[in-house]
Length: 139
Length: 139
DNA sequence: CATGGGGGTTCCAGTGGGGGGAAGGTCAAG
DNA sequence: CTTGACCTTCCCCCCACTGGAACCCCCATG
Image (cartoon, rainbow over all chains, first blue to last red; front, side, top):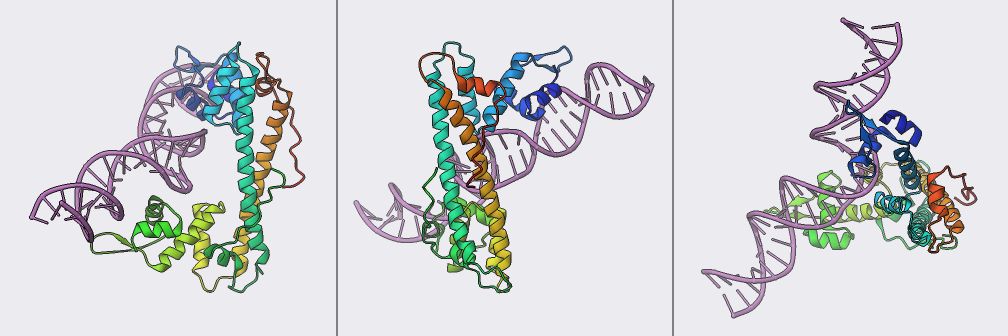
């Protein structure tokens, strides 16, 4: 299987697959003409990678996951630990974004949004903004 | 005012301020010895930039905001438009993160997390995951 | 007056995760 | 035989910085 078909089936751009080979995530064979020759196992790996990346795992996280994926003697607890750690990171990002959202919403709400130059948003950005409560209810 | 004091007062690392000068966001004067000499107006700009960046605006967004900030004839509506657009982007990121969170939580919940190698998380990553409903309730 | 330390300056390289595009090899169809 | 779709490597670009090397400047101290 050439890179084009592999890319289509894995749901990744060819460039990304070449990059993954470069950093050692996949090791496809080569045909006599120099073309990469992907086996089904490579495709499985790449599909796995695409899913893990879509869930926001970093490349290093994917590498760890992949190592466990290929280790028949792994303990599911190890995987769960990585996943839970990643869940915490996602939660932290959501909290941060919600905080930004709250602050900016607050500023926008005060702004008349008309033709006049007086703008509470710019005022809020240029002077010290009082911390808006960051919706810590549901992370 | 030298870069060190400016950095401390603006809440930005000196390196970041040099970078902002390089990309034309601030244009400090120079002393005879070659040191950057920041005026109060520069400090205001940098403080403004630090706040806008903390709210997640890109450098280009900051540039637009800054242009409006310095335009005495601006309409507050223009600022509000930019801010609202940014709010939408924040909301989209939150939705995406929540979707990831839901999917991963679902996988984690099914995982025993013990010493056995059978792991629903890895299984979920390697086969097609059914779309978990992405908590579209509160964006 | 030398020296030390804590500023400052420049430039180069690297991060993560690829994307764009050039220059050239290969293959199947018409 | 040519065309066009693939494939290859190579290098630079993105964002928004950050780290480090090598060097300059200023002030206080012995």
